[in-house]
Image (cartoon, rainbow, N blue to C red):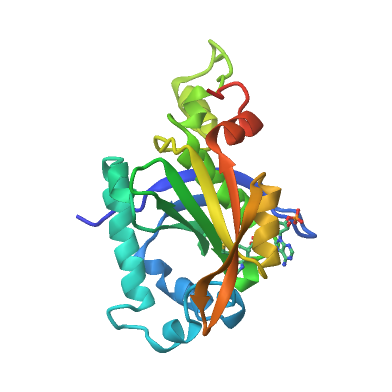
Length: 251
Ligand SMILES: CC(C)(COP(=O)(O)OP(=O)(O)OC[C@H]1O[C@@H](n2cnc3c(N)ncnc32)[C@H](O)[C@@H]1OP(=O)(O)O)[C@@H](O)C(=O)NCCC(=O)NCCS
């Protein structure tokens, strides 16, 4: 039996470009078939510029034990082990990479839950041809809805009163539509933060626009690509996120 890919959240997203088309954006676990796209953006020097990985590594290695194919396979299996039984203790202390999917893999949101399960780190990467469309903002939003929710947020929202004349099929479809959002139980972390290379304006702006507070700068706290780098700390509390997005269910 093959290992399934799990959908964490879905949203109808209006692309922030001239066409303004609406797409179905998914946040889902990785699949082995994501390896070519994952490898392409990991090997891109501009995408890697303010990140911890070395692009030459992914450019040169397609089949080795630390290749993109191996990485995607491992993330696929890890994601399945976390979501099969929603075993969130498995999340603690290990980065989970979730794929951003617009009718195919376009990037990822990385999530690290702390060893005590109470806090999370987040980061996002988009393939170069997919930036500037609002995808990172929409995808990190979905990840935060999942990380902060104690129960699926969709369950806590008021559902419209069903029309007594609707058919069973229509009722089922309405229930699916009402679930537009998070599909799995939430992790209920207390705080989420992002460490952003201080030179990475795009990423800093992304988290600021999502309502994260810039709490300070860790000076020369990371050593990447042969130099010490300053990390800006952006953070938001669960209460702040829920109050901002879902005042009716904030607790
Ligand atoms: C940072 C990154 C994830 C943003 O992805 P994206 O999908 O293009 O971002 P969005 O379109 O959702 O933009 C959201 C906000 O981010 C900011 N932003 C995005 N790209 C920007 C850029 N090139 N310059 C300045 N701000 C930018 C803007 O404030 C934007 O909101 P606005 O359009 O209302 O002004 C993407 O540029 C990327 O993958 N960079 C390389 C990997 C990386 O460094 N990741 C950060 C790890 S923490």
